[in-house]
Length: 257
Image 1 (tube, rainbow, N blue to C red):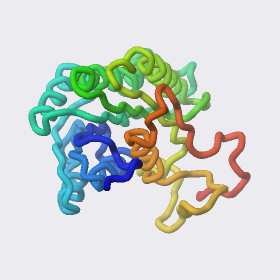
Image 2 (cartoon, rainbow, N blue to C red):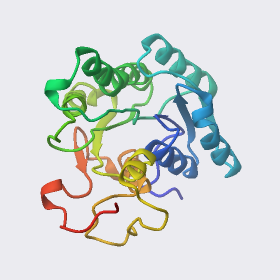
Image 3 (cartoon, helix red, strand yellow):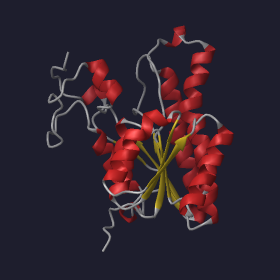
């Protein structure tokens, strides 16, 4: 018997799955026996993830796709439905940013981050959502970034706040089609970029069992995505799960230097 906490469906699209949180989500879903479709701008970026999933006995479809290219996004979703017959879950994980004081942001820099984090999710949600609405419904989970404002990350925060609002709005618009939309604010997570910038060495990550942590493991966010795409989350729609502690509540402890 399949656990109610396993992904409910046969096929899931995970964007930004070449590393970090997206990689962990793709592997967690594949372990549930779900056909996983993942994309990145370059095949070199996701090939190792594809190999890992296939070596573990999972089924994966992977292709190059820039989430900001609307035409290519719709083509990719068509390819996935042709390969697997349907789309039951979409995880909008692709994103990116950089630190800059608001007054120093150029218009181009602002638009670039909005395009990746918000428009990319917009394109995929419309494309995959069309399949779900015409079929048996499905689950859409989006990464809403850090809850609340964060200094020098105004462009990222604005995009993620809009994505949270979109999630809440679609919960009302698409519930009649059996489509549930929720999002996750994962907090600070040990993705490769964060690990590198914080200078965390192998073995320095606090274990998952430790409560007073300042940073999370990618697999913990994957667990949340798995839950939100499962029957166990049947009464959640338009919700945001905040993981970790907000910066004001994190314990005063020494960080890796």
